[in-house]
Length: 324
Image 1: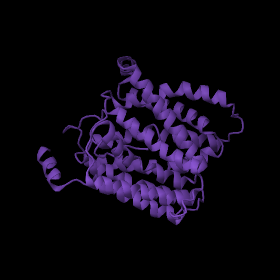
Image 2 (image 1 turned 90 degrees about the vertical axis):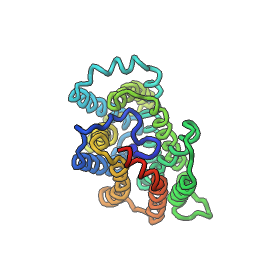
Image 3 (image 1 turned 30 degrees about the vertical axis):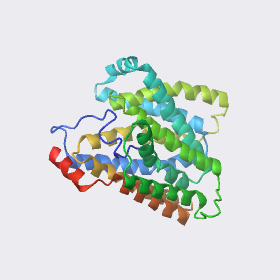
Image 4 (image 1 turned 45 degrees about the vertical axis):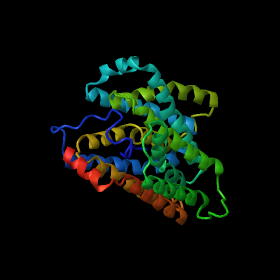
């Protein structure tokens, strides 16, 4: 999942500062659209991979691939020399951060995908941005506006519609554990970004360190689990590699470059709203998953809530334009 650029994370978390030499709106749009399109495919990749690998195996492979891709990116950016000093400067932070994301977050998210239709798991997980707003109010003492309460109500109504397949009064969940895991993943992801507000290190190096922390843990867990690897087909391996590259590795770099090259962060960030609908189409076409009408209704509620949450008063917009 990506960072949607809302009031909490827009312009923070060690994103590289924008300057006139890097601004290129066409490139920003190209990078942003490419990242969003790639992220739109990962729900399908999750399901294809989980058909053969356990969540722990899937995360182990994805961690290895992500580390390789991020090392290549760091080498390209001539940042390899920053890896050890960055970790040494704040080892506790990077250990905790890596245990949250990717380790705990993706293990819980993959298990949710295993128990739920991908369309449901993806849509529920998409409410993380609203969870972030609530947690920011608690931990960062940020003010919650009236529209945020309405947006939150709309988002979690959408979650309820999806989880119950539209049967709100009966509160009949197909997989209560799956729904609980999907919602738990939003807490972990939002918590990761809350923690990340105190991180001033390079974002690519920071992401790489998170995977380096998580990899030994996934290897130990996979050995403890004892699931075999011999049954995995070429398609299973390729799907896991794809997840490592385009959910966790390269696509983050593309998104980061989109934000780096634009003066209009909100405009680029709003591209994220395209992703879940493309994802539903791909799930329907590629793995023939039946998309329940309630999932579409619930997703629209979530997207509407997130859109309302991002709206700012006209006076704020005027102030921002004056500053720029």
